[in-house]
Length: 389
Image (cartoon, rainbow, N blue to C red):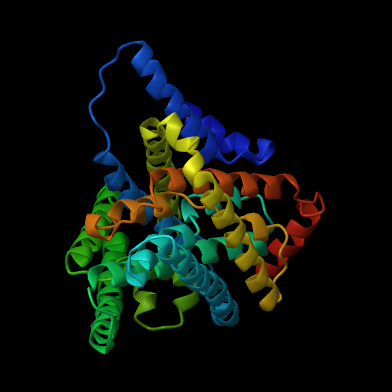
């Protein structure tokens, strides 16, 4: 874990994504435990649990950092389109390829393609911390929204046997219910965060967030919307201070509590993210990384990811450097892959392919960060900060 921390704070200088080093470290730990004949129980069931907790904390961490006001609404709409269109186009394209080389239905192939189309906010957001303010903002919005759109689409496909007007209607109803639940739950949690005077106040808030997420999942509601909604609300309480009921929170004092809460969330997100990738690296077999049967697929998928991304960024006239190459696959890809029902799995989309795509996209991101121009540093950052102030 301490080495994971070292990897995290040195990645700004080495430009090596910490996820690659964590996977390698987990692999080393596995072989050392075998050499030293240390008996370790089967840890595979722990991975989905850590992944879910990590996803919640990472989306919460990202949403707390986002600035939301009227002037940013056009920009957010643009970022949403840039997050959604490549995911949809690439998912359908890869699903057609999977269907051509397998005997499965298009719906099943699409369920297996979606995990490959989602940007991992767990890797992208920490990697973008040294970019310019507008680039960092773009990566945070895009990767967080990519997670949410991807999970929504994945759940819709895997939970409905037949796709039609009825299933779409139910899905729209679930979205409306979740938005209502998010609004009420956010107000309650914000009120508790403001009113609790006990010296322990943030832990119960986080536990309640996990509880609301878990209950929402039981009823197949899009629970990540609540996480994003809650983070945006308390993170931008100052922007809402003109509303009468918001003034009851005393925004200035409340912002100090939110800052402490954000710091705690960041620490916990780092801890869970590090544990997740260490464990995933521990569970990897060398043969899975070196699998020659899937490497061509992995290279083609990686090339397709960045080709579609390049075209969409050009279409929206968004500067492609250096954000073009920041589209890693990671925690959310693994989590959705593990969530595919057994009867909906296909032979092509296996663990080897997932691992190879994660490593390849991380290496491409590393190249992009290394090639980042030195002109994207302090002077421009100072101008950005002045503009925000």
